[in-house]
Length: 126
Image (cartoon, rainbow, N blue to C red):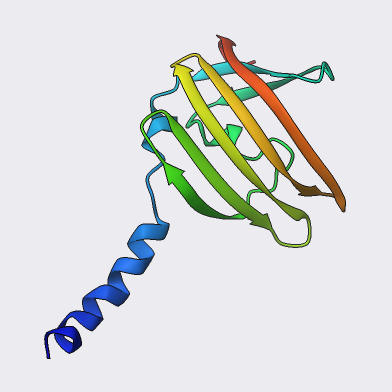
């Protein structure tokens, strides 16, 4: 009887789990950031307004669906799917408000990618 009474509340709880806050990203310093790839392939400039800009470095599509795998105080992991353009899984570990470590992999434009990078705040957005 108790299980039947709790069933409607359990259904409501599932979307709440998928809607994690990614609060750690909100604590990153806002402004211009430089992402330096560990393989030496260069750098990428990113204007960080919410921290979520660092999740999809190979997919700039805004319509991607995201699923939060880990939502910790110093590390987040997000898996995302961009309909018709691949998918990815990104982990971001915060060292300070102006320094993060990024590991990501997935498929973009029909080709696999995998990289590690360091993100560092450099100043104001250009």
